[in-house]
Length: 153
Image (cartoon, rainbow, N blue to C red; front, side, top):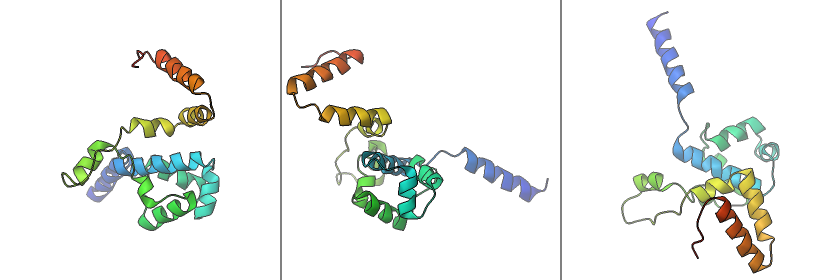
């Protein structure tokens, strides 16, 4: 193997083993969240954008970076402002990219992560349909007890 081939192989190995950029992964998570909230399939979103569902999957996982014009198109198709994709970014990512004192800390990212799962989305949709406040309180208490959390009220 020549020196150039060895360098090419090393670069390919690095690319294959790289983890997605945290901001790209966050933006992808937000794309997935919004798509799921709308009840839209990856295939349908891809059709609106002229992409395959595999490309949408790569965007959602953060494997492929979303360019500015594509992000603009995603925002239009999903009916959200571009800023939506950056909302709730993990504090450690935001703090390193903003000057001190110019931004408030975002809320905990675990909420977005939970709502990005199928179970989180289904639980949230079902919960908001409960109209009786006492039943809602009982559900919260049940989930807390199942999760091992003491009643904080």
